[in-house]
Structures are given as structure tokens and as C-alpha cells.
Image 1 (cartoon, rainbow, N blue to C red):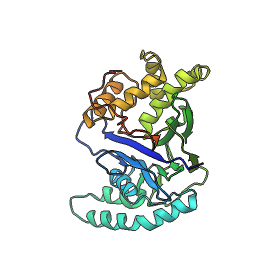
Image 2 (cartoon, rainbow, N blue to C red):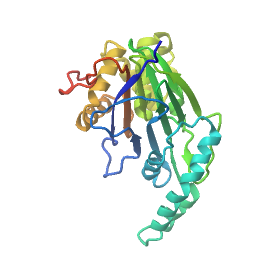
Image 3 (cartoon, rainbow, N blue to C red):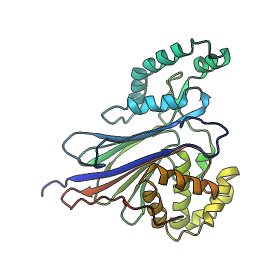
Length: 310
């Protein structure tokens, strides 16, 4: 029987925090292949990488630049172990350090800022997925997540989190200053491709939103446990419970439609934040759909403005 060939269709968007008192740089970054069609055929042993990274503004400085550096220098082949990730950081950190250490020599930076860089470094999460002709190989470190859904919107994989509670904790981060990579925090696995799978890579605010919505529709028995949440996470859960969406398929459709443009994505995130359903954060999502290459290729993404206004 001939081997099934697969095609990927994909889009990605990012948007910065809402209602910032001053203009700030988006601390998220993402990686997708750059083609005019947002579609590609998976062939042979060639790996196709996708990734998101969330710079941690509360740790050190130059968080956005570090997340961009991680994305820019993402290895062409999958990483599976903490040893491999540490070797990667060892290889790329010095270029970053040299650039920003030299920048800090300017008199425009205070001693406190310089000291923060040298003592705390720069930190970010990573969630990456490499596709070959038969499998997806993914890795996460921190609270940026990877999800896989089937055609019925049933979750097949959710890493590193399957529940909302861990989002209330400070995540482990990749930091050039410490170079520490904890094996028990690193999540990595391979997954066989199949027709009509959807892969979503997202930074923490949208990942939490997706998990809360999924629990509401697919694990109603777990929804009774949401009072164990606290603070802003609990408030999001309570608002989501009342938002009126009828199914998880409707949740995914609204997200998919939002990805058609930067304006649509920003508007979606703004509505959700105003409704209290997502935290105030930078928002980044990469959406990848798998289809058999023999099928007629039509864009999976709508060309018209979104019809759903959740």
C-alpha cells in the first residue's frame, strides 16, 4: 500500500497587550514557513518547523529580543531531550549576549538596567513542532502549549498542560544567563499524522482560554472543580461559563476566522479581554491543519470577514 502523503495549511497571528499605559513591544514571537499560499507538501525526511515563544518581561530585560532570538535560531531538526536543548542554548546565547552587552555600554542605560541584564539575563518559553512526511515531533518548555484536535474537535494531545491550574504558577523558562534546562519540565514526543488533524501552538493566555473552553464542553465533570482556581484565572473561567457559545467547534471556528488577518485577530483578542474571558497579555497563535495531499486543495481559511462574533 503506498504511503499516504500529507499537505499542511497554516496561518499565524500575534497581538500585543490591551490598554497598555504606553507603547510597548510585543514580547511574543512565532515561526512558520514563508510561502505565498500558506500551504506545503510534506516530503521525505525534510523537517518543517513551527514555533511560538513568549518572552518573560518579569525576568531580566530584552525579553522580546530573546524570544525572537530563540525563534530565529530554532534548529532545523527536532530536539527531544534536555541535553539537546541545553546544547542548543549553549550554541546561540553568546551572539545574543555580545549584542546586548555592547548596547548597554551606552550612557542612555542606567546602572540598574545594566545590572538586571547581567544578573537576571533574558528569559522566554518555547513551544515548537517539526513536521516530516509521517509525524509531528514537538517540544515545550514553559507554559506555551501545543494542542492536537481531530475532525470532531476532540482533543488528542495537550502539552504541557491539560488543566487550568498550572497557569497560575510562574513557568520555567529558557534563560541564557542560567542555561538551566530541567528534564522534568521539558515535554517532548512524536505523533503520527492523519487526515483532518489540527495543531495549535499558542502562548499562555490563549492556551488557558482553549483549555477552559474545552473542559466546559468535553469534560463537564471537571468544570465543577474550577472554584479551586483563584484570582484572574477563576474570573476567566466564570466569564467563559456564561459566554453563550454552544459548542467547542464554535470556539475553534471563531479562532480560525480570527486568524485571517492581523486586524481580525486583534479584534478577537480585544473582545475576549473586554468580556473577561482571557487575561491581559500578548497573544500569539499558530494554526496548522493536516490533509491528504491527493485531495483537492482549497484554502481552509475564509477569505471573507468573520461571520461569528463571539
